[in-house]
Length: 340
Image (tube, rainbow, N blue to C red; front, side, top):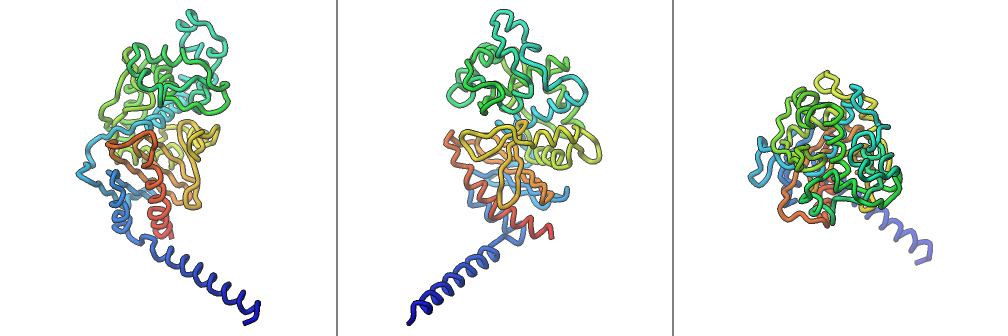
């Protein structure tokens, strides 16, 4: 056999194998919502999957005795809710993104003068670019047992320059909740009830507060998966829900821009909303510890809510890969079929 014939033979075999793999991948894509939920069953931590397209609920499934009516702790997905509330306050003129920590915590800086800290803007807080050392991860325990969460965060040294690299911190997002309360004259929960939750017919469960009574900005807010779906649809709609304007379209667009990037994950960050490519689509999402997600896929006009059990969740975040694989290999192919 000539060298040309050998090369032709192996090229033909390779072409056949590649074609077979592509055909198999296409044929294995779920063609029904039941098939999607069957795939979900294999993720043992998973508790709920809700899939909506063009505003229509395609399916919702709850696993391992999870309940549709029970409000679950959405962990750091709460930060995206705080961002929405800040956007509403910006829209109504209560807050300006160029205002600073010095504007809202003059008593602290009277006793602890630091011009660099005083000039950190609300915009910096929203994009996790305050530069202050984190009060998440290794500092979280000490922060939440402290007598004053605001003071603890403001006392942190600089890990980065303000406006520079991301320093992800729940203490940073908590400052936004305190600022919202100071600016509006209402508790964060009362503000949320009036301007966000009531218009969307959302009923929240528990919501932690700090020792001074401020509602926690960025963690430990409890919501039902269906109510998370409403938040996702609001964002996908550009700030409207059932025809009612809740937050400006410009705020949604600005929230979905990229200002910084995680040091630990291949994710970009806007105003407390993440984004990354998945299955050839740009996906925007809220993300909470343990696997609490609101995914928005604008090109497919879709919102997907996924919640997971917190039992066994660790800082290693091993739950992420199965969830994103499930989104890419099962949910997105199904949505592509239904979008045709």
